[in-house]
Image (cartoon, rainbow, N blue to C red; front, top):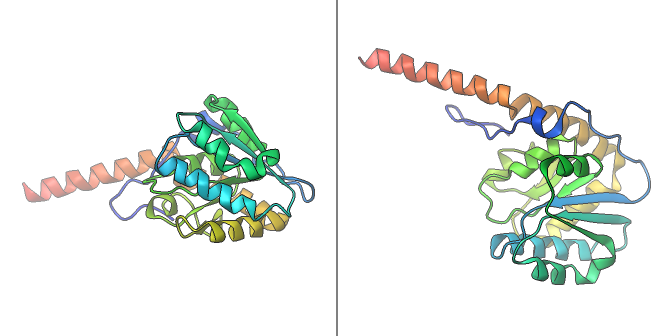
Length: 215
C-alpha cells in the first residue's frame, strides 16, 4: 500500500502514540488476544460490530479473548450482538490514547470489519504497536495496510471471509510474528510524521516549479 503519485499518504505521530518500544513478542501457544477499538455508534459502526460478532461466533472452537475499546449510544446494541460469545468479551469502554497504545501492545491481532470507513487510522495505530490486523479490502483500509504483509484484508461485510482470515492468523503464530515485525516497520517507514513532512515538501516543490514554469 502507499500513496498515489502526487497524494499525501495517511499518517499518525508514531512517537507520540506508540513510543519507541518494539512490538511485543507473540506467544507461540495459549489464548490469543484479539482487540478492537471503535466508537459504538449506529449505522456503519454498529454494522461493523455485528459482522465481527458473527465472525467470532464461528471461531468458538478456538482459544481467544476479545478486548473492545469504545463506547457510545449503540453500546446496548453492541452488547446484544456479542451475546453468544459474551464469555470471551471484555468491554473496556472509552480509553485515553496512552491506555489504547498499551492495550494494543498487549494484544496479538487487531480486528475491525471497517464497513464504509474512508480511512482507518486505527489500523495505523495498531500496526504502529506491532499488531497485525484483519480488516476490509476497501480503498481506505488498503491505503494503510500492506495486505498479506502486515495484515489480512477481506471483502467488506463478508463475515465468513473475515472469520476465515482471523482463523488463519490465529492458528499461525509464526505468521503473526512476521506480520507483527512488518507492521511495526511499515508504519514508521510509510505513515509517520517525518514521511508525511517529506511528502508535503515534495508536493510544494513540484507546485512551485509548475508555477514558475507557467509564469
